[in-house]
Amino acid sequence: MPATIRTIIASDAAGIVAAVAAFAIVVTLARTVDGGGLAGQEAFCYWVPTLADPYALSDWTSPVAYVYSPAFIQALAPLKVLPWQLFLAAWTALLLFAVRFLSGPRLFAVAVLFAGLEIGGGNIHLLLAVAIVLGFRWPAAWALVLLTKVTPGIGLAWFAVRREWRNLAIALAATAAVVAVSLTIAPTAWVDWVGVLVASTDKTTGTWSALPVPLIVRLPIALAVVTWGARTDRRWTVPVAAMIALPAAWFGSISMLLAVIPLARWESGRPLDTSGPATRPWLQRREIVAGRASAALAHTSAVLRRAQPRAALSSVAGPLRAPGRDRSTGPQ
Image (tube, rainbow, N blue to C red; front, side, top):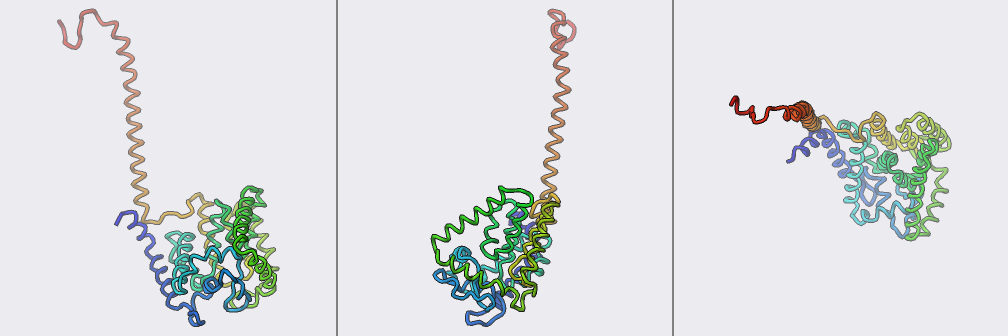
């Protein structure tokens, strides 16, 4: 096994164990098609809808309801051809990869535990967190937020407050492009989705698994948080504001706070996904090689500088030598 792969596995060892355990628990306790089981309730809501009639089950407070845009269900079409158990396995693996991206290797195990409810339920909050992090570099990633949960898109106020109009335009244009393509596939579904959103506005607190705080109360708080963050250059406030602005404050949605980790690293000048302890020898070897190359270059430069005066002296002294006298052979 290559050394690089061994170091990655070593740095992620605890996290990999936690991820495998979480994966096994979800797959083992997965709900069944007829309604039994405990895990994957939200993921089941993405597997059940058909492209022909995605909103046949769309009552927000019912156990099985699809309330996101037609574009999201269309994007999942290749995955939805799988049987339910395989769909859930693939979806859970995707969520675990999202956790790893957000946490990095050192905090992977802790992050899996922190996001346990979200991984078990199969909602999309972790994917939204990834989209928000990526959105600082690729604003088009915000399309996922706007075309699913919608209201967490208040995080785009970051660009507006900072007058980063180009980034804001890219985010909105990318979303509009996705909508345009989706409309050509299922135009009537978009009309149905608007109706679903309108019908769901007064139901976002009618469930035991969400905090009983209405969106109309949380939305101004979210706007205040992201505005303060934009003015003080605190990127981590964007996922916090997006979480506060969710249509329903699900208990599992706290997993969105994992996005704070890479954004805090970014603000400190480190890469989004810092290397673990086991990768440090590789970094040290790179530094050693670079140091040796620099020392060799400095030594060569010094030798050349010393040689230049000698060469100049020889060129001057050459004409002064006595004719017919060869110093290299001694006295004649």
